[in-house]
Image (tube, rainbow, N blue to C red):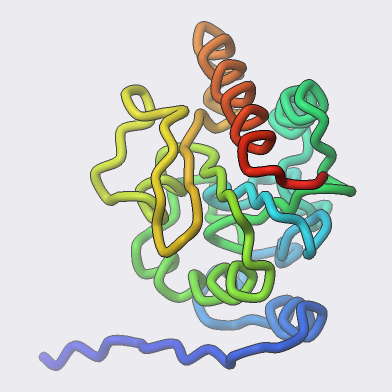
Length: 200
């Protein structure tokens, strides 16, 4: 039996809104058939700090915005604590733009089909810092062997961009003992922003 591998070809965009418009119509994988909304992202596309999660959950699928519900409220608390605001001085996106059924982990083929949208977001935005929220985002963007429990809060440089992984807010709700560790990571981010002289 011959195995045919789907190769997704992405356009090189010059306009963020055009990128968003095309992404919202995406049919690159089967998740398009089960989504309520394609969740492109939220925030200021000119921001120098980009947060990346793994995929929309049920609330995100319904509202069309990443990190809403209890996990989003917790993330906003951490952000506000260091002077960041999802609507003003950062951008938030996900590896996948559509919700996997039952909130399961994104499959590698789904990530491959969708990652081009995030790459274009990064290419247009040119963020100075990318924060990976959770293991899956960090494994995709920082290193396939990334261990969030051991390497959270550590900055890595890739292609001129600083990247750091921290705990996914939903994981913190399941294991509140990690909340203090996450707070330290966000304080470290605040210090890095000051060190680099990033204007918020």
